Amino acid sequence: MNILVTGGAGYIGSHTIVELLNAGYTVIALDNLVNSSRKAFERIAHITHKTVEFIEGDIRDKALLKKIFANYHIDGIIHFAGLKAVGESAEKPLEYFDNNVTGSLCLIKAAVAAHVPHFVFSSSATVYGPEAPVPYQETMPLGTASNPYGQSKIMVEQILSSTSAAVNNFTVTLLRYFNPIGAHCSGLIGEDPKGIPNNLLPFVTQVAVGKRAQLSIFGGDYPTPDGTCIRDYLHVVDLAKGHVKALQASVRQQDGQVHIYNLGTGRGISVKEIVETFENVTAKAVPYTVAPRRVGDLTAFWADPSKAQQGLDWQAEHTLEDMLKDAWRWQENNPEGYGEN
Ligand code: NAD
Ligand code: UD1
Image (cartoon, rainbow, N blue to C red; front, side, top):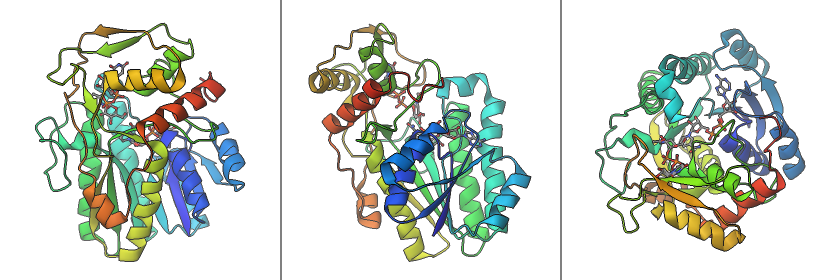
């Protein structure tokens, strides 16, 4: 089966391509490299001994999409391409809506025109909104997002649901990720954020490797056992395997419906637990200060992952220690990431 992976050079995309190739799929990757490096594909080839057809380009380029669907018989799409920095999205809303919403719209239209039967979308736990009780369950209604990044995820979920309802044989899977961290155990691919990392783990590993002086823990006065926020961190390889399972389920069902799954562990971990466990498993110090809360952060959320367990036969298998060791191996082996930032 030929799978088009948009955003395939990125953090989650590159790990998913490894799992797709291992499972025997043929992968065509489309990425404009705005937040990634083509070197990811050399590393993927090293890990899998298989090659990916890489097309450098933008999901908003309608002529390119038409060409891709004319040249390849695409059986399914996994759509990762998008911008993901929450703070930046508030400063540049139009850029985010254009990239994430208009871009998705271009891709969905081209997919429907080419009669692609399976479409898997990278959504986020952020769509549940601040009012949702924990653990988050897929039966809960979509919430409201306070930033354009989150709003773009809600919009694309809605666009895909309406499209699936109107178009015959267009099976959609919305995967709502919790907090992916870690890296492939080879240490060859991993998260390589441009500039100052927004997310916790790349910041922690950059402090440990000496690129940054100290971590700021955003808020020490939350109503949690140690005062810091709680999230559901899952290994990026588990997340990648969830995409393969989602695609397999979509092919099995072939029902033209929308399927929604949380991909998380079901376990909440605090920021301080992350730092302490990282120090224990790597023997590297992570100096930190407790800084003011970050605007928009929620106190605590985690997944109810039981639907994915039942519907996809998927569950997260790696421990927190695995995630942190693997994140460190990637950072230690590649202090400058892919070396292009
Ligand atoms: P990433 O930035 O590493 O990967 C995204 C990829 O998309 C990059 O390679 C980038 O160059 C590419 N891209 C962006 N705009 C494009 C465009 N217009 N055309 C073609 N390529 C484009 O991010 P990631 O962490 O791998 O995230 C992948 C997806 O998962 C994103 O949609 C993100 O919003 C979603 N997601 C990520 C997280 C997370 O914590 N990392 C959580 C929830 C959801
Ligand atoms: C963030 C986004 C979320 C998005 C996800 C993936 C916000 C508010 N949410 O999730 O919408 O889907 O990234 O891109 O940005 N932390 C620190 N110090 C740091 C960095 C983070 O203490 O330098 C803390 C945060 O306060 C949070 C936890 O670490 O409690 C995790 O933060 P982060 O990795 O940014 O993920 P989320 O905020 O959960």
